[in-house]
Length: 580
Image 1 (cartoon, rainbow, N blue to C red):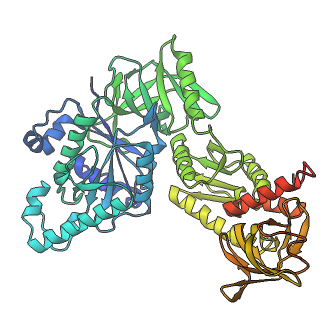
Image 2: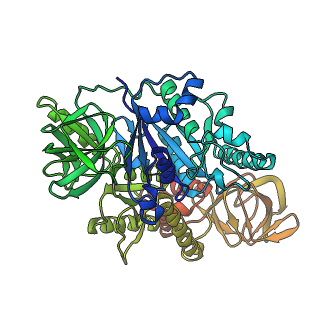
């Protein structure tokens, strides 16, 4: 049978995610949020009866007959938190709604959401919210097209400008988008549905597009066995008065009953428990605010609360399985595998990463990988003394890696290593990149600046201007940077001379970059005797200098790294352990 598709509402803070969901289900949750911002993930079910009441007329016009029982919405914080929570084989969301303020457009957290949607290959549509605040707009009908066509021409023009500004900005981020009623290919183009959470304009069209995309493209994704063992994802762990530790869970396959054996993830491995109590929220109510009713069983897809013993240390964002006696070990292995998924493919050297849930850890890893920031260890929970000591060890290998990056966890103060903690992913990465820039400037102005610039040059044939006292010859920089005062050696390691002066295009300069050509004067060199035209010369680098370059290799250009490698190869012909 088909279950409810799981739909995540996501977007930049204060763009109206909860208000939009509020408008859909006709509740007043947004007004009760602390500061008007969603502080945790919640879920609510929109049954088929509500869908028919809101957008049934549009579904009939589109000749859409729905075969699934409703929609399950998950509301997330402003950062891209939907990847905090995973289901086995993919992300928890079947489809996402990215809410964008039609006036503010794409903001930093919007970009973060787009990046994660792309990397997770999650289908999504865009709700262009707050059209009611377009100058001159007058609400006419909850159906968008009817309301839009009854506006004054200048208002329609402003409306179109806002929508197509958004289309252009999305194109800059390599997404092809179009207003939903002008989409020619839903498999290729992102549908933009203009809406107002305040007046509920566009809500029928938004639900119609979600239903249509689900029916056409996601039918295989929402197949479930209503009689099989349950599979779900833990959203939150909390204490329930009179019950003890309970888990807020999204169930996306099978059925869970009281007295079932469940397998969940703890910091030290799988936790096995019995279901003592099952609680289900009222329809159209959000889990964090709803009154719960006790039930004997719950079928997927649904949000529910599970009570049992030993659940206080369960890790949010990890899977929940029910298990029969003959499948218990299999389920424990599956949980263990999910715990290991983020800690695989770590780098030999890099920063330490901490987060509150498995999914948030994975989200941070994805974005760090895209930024080419190496991670030596990633784990869930608060920052510990071991994290700080491991960061100190990384700092010894690379000063820019002596850092602990934390997401959605309590901050700590450390004098020995840099600690960066935020509850928005992109701010963690931005602050780290800013810190790296500051440290790089300090290093470059200090120790690194005192080292000779590595370079590889060729003496050009036919460009000898003076053979000696000093020799002046045309050179080409093949790799690195040639500076005045640089000492040079031959390809056999024999020191030859230094650079007295450089003249390029009849001007005296202090350095040449890769592929530059110029006349260079070499005191103490006799062309044809010490060295010949066409020969290659390298910067003279001592062993100590080479080791310092290795310490700061992340600050070197690729051609400088290549020069240093060639110099090391030359020197190791006489001394195999040179520079090691």
